[in-house]
Image (cartoon, rainbow, N blue to C red):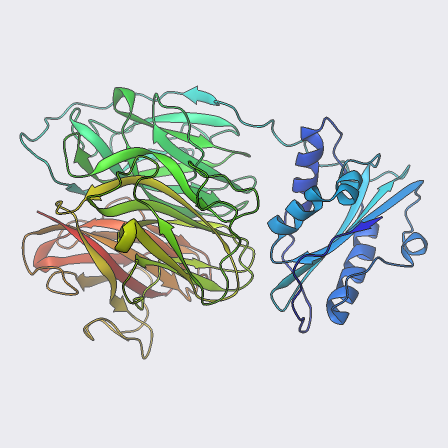
Length: 553
């Protein structure tokens, strides 16, 4: 038997943690080494859980001295791994780095019992391995093989429209649905509808030009809202230019059965298409378009590249900002974004990043803001314990070509992928983020407007004035870059952001569950009276809106 000790913290009253993905991690590792998966033995899991609760309650890491007596399932071989740390991911990596624990993971066993407890922000776990002749529930299906290039499935093309002559800026649109793989679903033109869930290790192409107001040619990149729903397991989606190699990056992280969305500014590839890769399990995918940039424009789209990965062994495009450890409570970390991943070393005004938090130890939020400036009272990404979640950030670049990333509470690993950049003096006007709306009682905004107005009721639409506030001019504004957060919803639902004065589109921007706090970026076309409209489908929910920049009309 073997034990591992990570950095310890004092414990409070223990609470059983969420089920986690230990069995999947163990069996994936065994499959990678040519070994059969382990079945979970419920009786042994009860032994493991009881011992884990004892360790957490006493704040003591130790092996169970009565293990051989307490395991009632017949066994001929027994092993145990115990540990505690900041997250399931960091703990498992520590097991892999330890010869004794690794030997148990790859040992001659056919079953395992698993226990875990979250106590005072520390995750405790016990794994009891056994070789048994007992008849147990069959192990889960083996994990898919490591994904290589993936399988590509093409979709049909759309109808051509003309490209505006001489256009260099962003072209905002009333959102339109371009893909919905669910049975019986509809899209703006009937194309890419009802095609079935995207299979594991599969890449599906999506025609984005000539559809939903996007012209058939001259398009450099598109602004999409990407949604995953009814996924069979946790995983991620990556969007990249069709015809290019799939990058080491992700856009949307999801859990089994979750409905969740993220904004994507995607470079358009061959045949006016983008490619959507699904890592594991199967999931339905919904894609709405919100606007586009011309091929010749101020926005410089890139194939995504990883600029930061704080996890142990994490890799980045150039080795910088990798494996640097989780961000602590109240900590701010600098990230150099210029001179990396295709971003030039100078002349950069703003970057488009996909920011991911993984393995957080508590409820928290991240804020990205220009290096060298005061931290604003805003947020970009909201997380819960053990969650992996991403959000798009259009961040103004500060001193030394850097942005700063602040973590509010607990500790969390952070991953940042770059998707493009705007030059200094470009059409995109990056701002230090400012709060434009907060419906919660006693809340504050940058100018006192739209503060404390109360939750949005089901089926209701609320208008948000975005011009003439927080550095946005009173006229000449075509689109704004917003971070829209939902908190305290009474039911599962979604928000749709669209130009005021137009019909509400068949699209969504933020998907949420009851009592969840979750955010998504929105590049919103500005409508009548310098406003955007926010529609809430079901239940009631508080809504917070921060602005990060604007684009001219």
